[in-house]
Amino acid sequence: MKKTLGVRELAFPAPAFVVGTYDGAGMPNGITLAWCGIVSSGPASIGISVRPGRYSYKSLMERRAFTVNFAPEKYLAEMDYFGMVSGGDVNKFEKTGLTAVRGDVVDAPYIKEFPVNIECEVTHTLDLGAHTLFIGEVRDVKADEEILDASGRVDAGSAGILTFDMTSGSYLLPGALAGKAFGAGAKYK
Amino acid sequence: MKKTLGVRELAFPAPAFVVGTYDGAGMPNGITLAWCGIVSSGPASIGISVRPGRYSYKSLMERRAFTVNFAPEKYLAEMDYFGMVSGGDVNKFEKTGLTAVRGDVVDAPYIKEFPVNIECEVTHTLDLGAHTLFIGEVRDVKADEEILDASGRVDAGSAGILTFDMTSGSYLLPGALAGKAFGAGAKYK
Image (cartoon, rainbow over all chains, first blue to last red; front, side):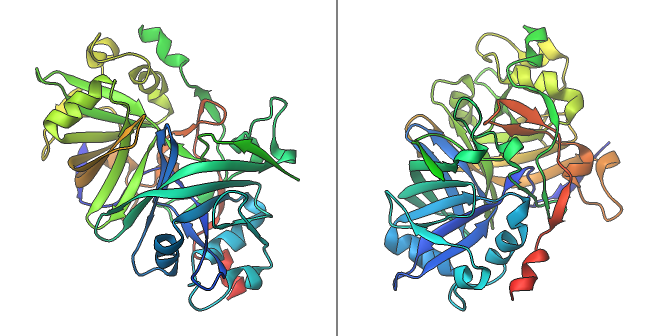
């Protein structure tokens, strides 16, 4: 039996992206976001939604660049902290001891200790009310060599990249394999 | 040591949303998408990216409505199939035996057998090259009563909603709890 829950935000899974920016004074900052994901394959683009009141909003508007950084369980506390406080009040890199490295391609810092870092240049902004959607074209992807498989690719599951579960308000480890895509569905063809 | 992988689509996690639409003749259709997620909290809105060549694209443009349906492992094969073939060639609901139910609020069908169904009305479209991003305002969320917890909320992890892992080309079960959000980060405050 279906029950109507009304209008609410509900999706699963959601990412936990730590988004790096420089502010007007050149201070590195990061913010943990969950309203994010890939939005196009060509040019490869990532969408991130940010409330206009957040400190990162102004940096994104001014610098038109950001990085996306993925965290494994080892950095859960740091990632969580980046979502709890404002870059207007504190330098989160100093507080956590994480290292901000200037992007090779874009005007934004990435987090050295996090195993995957993506540099993006803002191509579109779209005001959606509570949040503004920033579309970033991917300009470079970097990963720690230790997490690359034999063919040189990131396997996010093996790397232990965390997921945000908004329905339980928690971070989850990658789950077990349920099935290969473009596999089980063939039985209906 | 960081290694540059160049420009590529990489994110983790990604959802596996089966998006329901009616075509011009009123035939229900569904397409499995991974470039999706929440894009705003107010009005609550979901973004889905669709290639202009896909059969669902025309339906989305004409009807300006869609549903999002989440699948647990039990429906992995059906979900996979919805991403493998075109609604221009086949009625996927007939083939799989799944039931298309007319939305209560919007002009799109939802999948009765899937435990969570979200009705959305298209408010914006944004051409991003290979994909067009459709923003849908959430008009209603429905869930099977069996998957609601004591407080009437969906816990997606307990419900076994699948994740798409684009880095390994597979569907994953929800992972184990790594930590509560707004928890571990407090140690840096």
